[in-house]
Length: 190
Image (cartoon, rainbow, N blue to C red; front, side, top):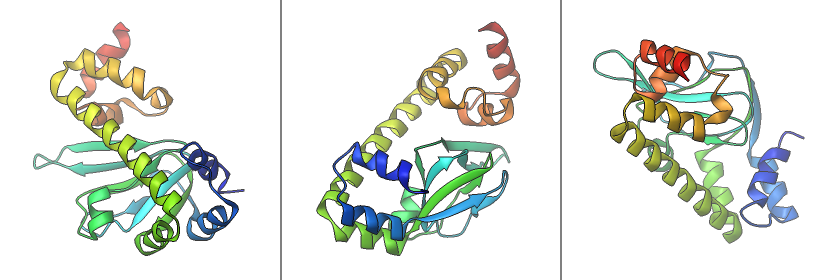
């Protein structure tokens, strides 16, 4: 069943009833994508929320110097979207792509609203999940802006261990805001 991992995860936040489960299964659409396929283009509206059953997704943008900056990487049992664009239905400044072949589920903005209004329990579960993701982003922002390269690398190894052997040095340097040479040196010395 494509939705099993999603339902299991949501049950960790609150018991999902059979009718809620049926609604989730009807509204989250399964999708298989290949490595390097784009899910959301920069300058388009990010009108989808993705859940990863298998594979890796990333959200990234290109800064004014032409350097790619990876904002977030999602692996199994994780969600990914550009929450500002998704919530406010505004233009998106990021690209969301597969960095491994991926089995994902997605829900569009209209159906997501329908899901949230269908159940106070689902709305409560969403609030808990969004709170955790907010904490994750704040901690990551703090680490990127307060730690040296070694501190950033240690934080990555401790908090993003499912990615350790799955992303290349170029992607890791983009994720940690350090040079590729620095990543190579850190890996060699650890």
